[in-house]
Length: 307
Image (cartoon, rainbow, N blue to C red; front, side, top):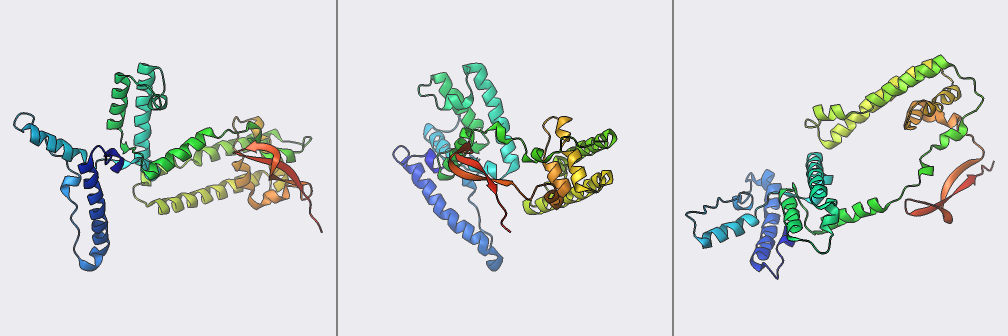
């Protein structure tokens, strides 16, 4: 909150925030030590509770003091915490989505473009103030928020080369391989089932509040391992030969849009090494004369095995 109160414009509020930061360190220390001392610290109510302003009975001086006090109340988490709390992130995304739609309707531009517009009208400034007021997070120019916005800008500036999106596994397909249509259809059913069950979003809704972030990650990983084991057995019923099974799986992209190649890696596991040739293997290495990818340049090089 400190950037909201510049020392040059609001010295009293600025000093009050600094004092609260110092006191907060004492409160946190007392909270840590309460297990030893048995005394829980008291968090100042005026830091988190607004006072009601009576426009009829309060004097102008009292009204002004209450407004000043309310402006210092902690009522929002800082912006960077959207990367720590899913609920806060979803709330912020919904907020941005709604105001972005309103901004396009009223000013014919996205919300971000309006924020960085140099000369704003009074209506545009009022709209931005309204968006900030109703935002579930506090997006001040603090260090952590600046770092987040810096990484977000870098992410937006990344250009992806679509030629890298195709899996190198396709290079190992045998063109004249004899394919059974029945086996192919059976494998296609397994792939669709696997993709559908691989999404554990419904589990998060049911159990997300009961587990810590670490425990929930371990729980979903166990579910994932069980799912892979189940469908690996089903696919092996089609063929126990890893090379033959691979030749079927590598033809799935012809029958499915946006095929997910992780299916092949998950099902074959370590057996995928039987598919990849041991000679003429290639790697991607950084090179000034290579192709651009994620801000760096790479070239394809052959790896030679010396016996």
